[in-house]
Amino acid sequence: MHATVVTLFPGLFAPWLTSSVVGRAVVGGLVTVDFVDLRELGEGRHRVVDDRPFGGGPGMVLMAEPVVQAVEQARGRHGPAVRTLLLTPQGRRFDQRFAEELATAPDGFVLLAGRYEGIDERAIEVLQPEEVSIGDFVLSGGEAAALVILDAVARLVPGVLGHEDSATEDSFSGPERLLDHPHYTRPASWRGHEVPPVLLGGDHGAIAAWRREQRLARTRARRPDLLEPRGDKEGACSPES
Ligand code: SAM
Image 1 (cartoon, rainbow, N blue to C red):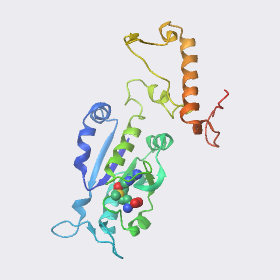
Image 2 (cartoon, helix red, strand yellow):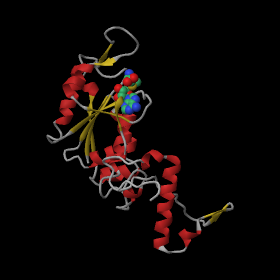
Image 3 (cartoon, rainbow, N blue to C red):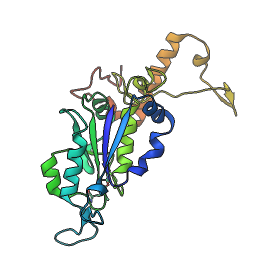
Image 4 (tube, rainbow, N blue to C red):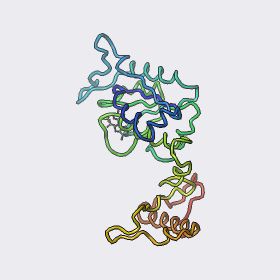
């Protein structure tokens, strides 16, 4: 996975890129994340990248020229099929399918993190990015959204997770895209709460059947929308199955 982030705050990413699962993937060369610092493309001695909005109103707007130059620089580090994603609350909702698409993007992807009131619309017209949102709420900048996307995609890269299979068994994953089943670990009895006996019996068939039942029951109770058939859902299962 190769991603380039265009941002005013590349320093916000360092702890995440050097810790835990993703940190190991970066060290191992499975994941590469680099940056174009928008500030370096700013105007004049003060490297100005923003200005007041035409028409008045609160806040500042990122200017088109530095944004376009930065994204062009970022795209230049990738092959011709690079995907460019503008982080915005107004975009397509990011989800597991989207993460899977990005994990297999042959020339990687560029993430453009906005700040202030957003980006001069003409930069968006010129760059024609895919607009992507991580949810119906407003962040103060695109960096937190970029981290969410980078993390969700990186863990899908083969070899990044210890267990090759574990990502396909997570919620929203695998052919059925159900919620995950509950998990338990030692001790088997804890504060009067017992582990379901089937998990202690060593019958792998029975365990698999119990887990699938749990996945279906949870999905039905918490996210029935996931059980509704959709055109592109491989092996969609009905609540009765
Ligand atoms: N005025 C914009 C609007 O209401 O659509 C919000 C601007 S927000 C304060 C600043 C930046 O944070 C945005 O340009 C975007 O990059 C990022 N951002 C905020 N919420 C986001 C979300 N839900 N998903 C992705 N990016 C988000």
